[in-house]
Image 1 (cartoon, rainbow, N blue to C red):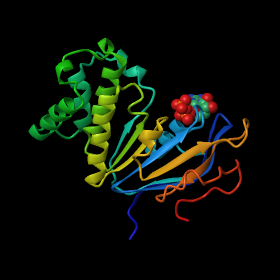
Image 2: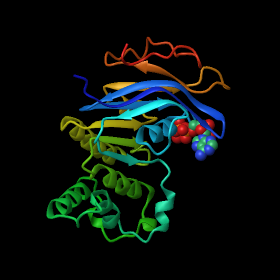
Image 3: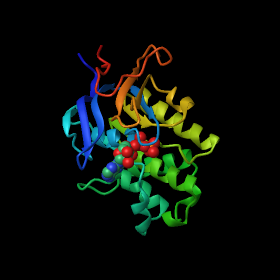
Length: 238
Ligand SMILES: Nc1ncnc2c1ncn2[C@@H]1O[C@H](COP(=O)(O)OP(=O)(O)OP(=O)(O)O)[C@@H](O)[C@H]1O
């Protein structure tokens, strides 16, 4: 039986008619981590939005296992600064449901992750009063405190120092160990190396839309030749 919890099949995407992604195929299994890499503008955030259902592909399809709960940390989160939220309130949002108030367990989870990400002492601070790293840790906490089956995280450690980066990596490893699927975009090769699979988005020519080259479980990164845009894309099922 397949353990896939998330899959993109022949996915393409255009912004106002301008192609960004073409024939992207990937799949993510429960209890595993996949890293998306690629140059600025290669389409990582766009692909994460498609995987999370924030945008619909213009070609192909994204499949999520029915009932799978998904937590998303988007890259662009400046709008949230306009809200008069404290750090604690922002993290608590990760446990809100429309059906009930936060339980004792929810509050314990919030307190625990704030400790782990070293933001407990900032609990009453407003978001707009935080440093870049403090703000990122708060938003990572909001995503990771969710009881999700799939965590989709866009450059979750880009603003973090080594120690805090390590804390996030430990939390990601724990989520994977307990059976969640994690998908991250990253520019850090060491971070991407934490994942079982790496998918590199690249355009074969400056004018080409992004397509995929794929590193598999066996880490054939160095030996794989990038696909040319529009040409056959390696499929992780191969
Ligand atoms: N809302 C939008 N409207 C039009 N074009 C967009 C929009 N968002 C992104 N793009 C374009 O789509 C392409 C892919 O952008 P995307 O943000 O997905 O890349 P990325 O790989 O995440 O980049 P980075 O590493 O800089 O975060 C870029 O050429 C970008 O200019």
